[in-house]
Length: 78
Image 1: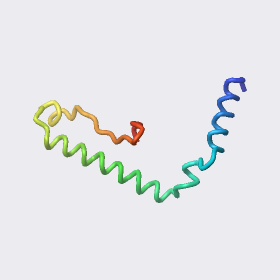
Image 2: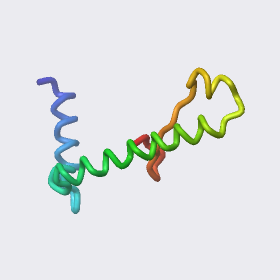
Image 3: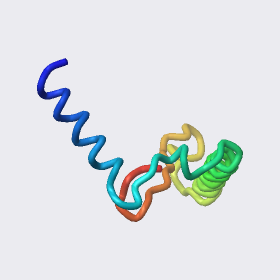
């Protein structure tokens, strides 16, 4: 392993071992995760249907040429 890769692994371990930092799999059971994921997918599908229904542009309602996404508070796409 190169020294760069070793340093990156060390940084990752130090971030994960910080106070209060835990892996997602330690906090959320698989069933809860699946329920949340399916809920988010349903939200995006509703967004898509609303955009198509409310659009005045033929590009949107005929060609489906648009995107929908959900972002968190740090502007990262969920």
